[in-house]
Image (cartoon, rainbow, N blue to C red; front, side):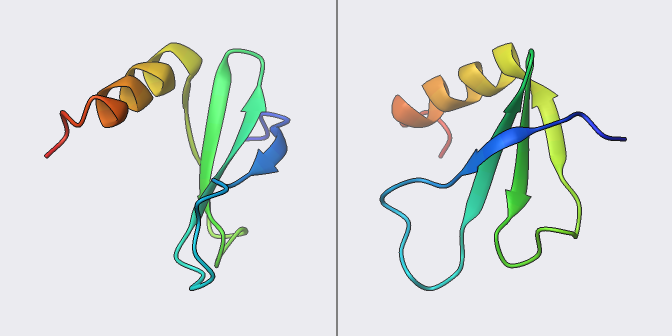
Length: 63
């Protein structure tokens, strides 16, 4: 399914080892994919769910 995800980017803090994911945006959605295998599939989640996930990461609650 094509969600017209655009603006793919990865974190500025990503290292040079290639073990990164990147995110892309579409209205109300966020796509997440592996930078080493961009054609291997994309996990697409709702923007509210992705924002909640990031909040939990930033609060260090996902250990």
